[in-house]
Amino acid sequence: MLPYLPKSLELVPKRMGFSTWVDHLAFGYDLVGALRPDVLVELGTQSGVSYFCFCQAVREHGLATRCYAVDTWQGDAHTSAYDEGVWNEVSAHNAAHYSDFSTLQRMLFEEALGRFESESIDLLHIDGYHTYDAVRGDFESWYPKVRPGGIVLFHDIAARLLDFGAWRFWNELMTTHETFWFKHGFGLGVLRKPGPARQAPLLDYLFSKDEAVVHTLRAFYVHAAIHLELTRKKRRLDARRSKTSASP
Amino acid sequence: MEHLYLPPSLRYFTPLRVLHGSPGEHACFEYDLVEALRPELVVDVGAGNALPFAVFCQSMQDHDVDGLAYAIDVWENDDTREARGDASFTSLNNFFHAHHRFAYLLRRDPEGALAHFADGSIDLLRFDLARISYPPRELFDAWIPKVAPGGALVCAGIVEGSTGREHWRARLPSSFVFEAQALGVAVFDSSGGEEPDHDLLRSLRAPDEPGHRALAAFYEHARRHHALMIEVGEHGTELVRKRT
Image 1 (cartoon, rainbow over the protein chains, first blue to last red):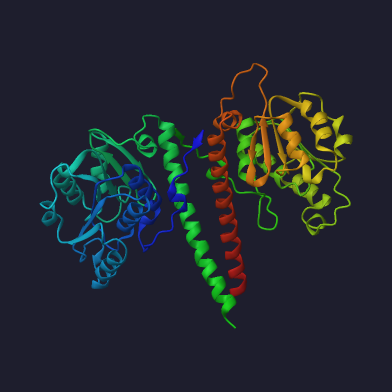
Image 2 (cartoon, rainbow over the protein chains, first blue to last red):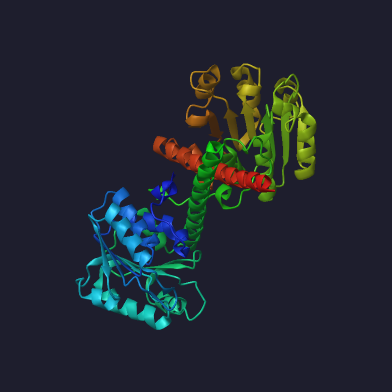
């Protein structure tokens, strides 16, 4: 037996922030490594916690992926209006680390749509406005742009607050598509478009017909999220320790 | 082909017995081995501070294994600080009485304890060569016949270049060794000759070097994960104490 021991268990995220996506960083990092996408698009980037995790995975897995983040960086009714500082930080981080393969497209999703050819996107992450109509609209507009065998991620499919409706649209998609979903971190849905799929252990586990494998995969990435949180706490404690020992 | 493996040690194991911030170097592996093997008779020869023995017992309890467990050691002439404190015979007795009523401490040397166990009766036998003054070869000759068919032997302290390692390899040439921690593990043939139905036991029996290295790497991750849990938790307590 070669136990699955993905690279994310050693992950040190370069970009962190307040986001429930923190619980999915390990999975997002490994998914990019497994899928080896040529083109990755994120709809709704805000402070870049998920997007820059994808970018970090591209860099650290040595991939030739082109990454695009689409957002107005002005906020919406669910996030409230952003301070311009969010955009400044995101663009500075992008420029400092990933400008050779990552492009920020500061515009509405529908404005960006025409910039991508049909069936060109290998990994699409939908994390924009979270009402039922908005999520459905984003999916229906962008799905034709996804390559057969490509992956679409949906965040917040377990969030039942305000007028969030991603959960309801996700329930519909599960009856018609090949899917997997995580329950932690407000839920993350993974949908594969029919077509020739890349081969990798993680992709086999995600779309396995064996319930035991699916259950174990969910538990594995809860473990990975806890492990990442512990390593972050440890680094913070180490920093406090050295501060304390340095002070007179 | 990689295999999705998330054993009990990473799902729900919280060690009951921790000394100096550690449940022991191999606690996760020991916990999972008991879950896989479901041993009805566990014997730990040279139990010392009983960290591994406590993990065996905790796993038996957590997994509803209806068995008995015996820790064997002289627990004397031991001038380490831990032996006088949390690892003293009295303290150990209190711990096992409080948590695991099926566990007993036998204050004997390995030779004196031998007669208490019939051949082929022990499902999980552990040695710690660092705590046993007998020559490894005599120890192995005397005790290995006690292991039941399908049972397992765990041996700590088989350091590369030592006579213990030499005799271990001679006696159990295809067994698994966690090189970094000098821990040997052998899973014996069952009476019917069938392969075990548990992933961990099958891996331990497979003469597959890459598989063994991968399993060792996995348990190194598990060890680090538990070390982080303990360190972060303990230090958190420390900070609270400082603040108050």
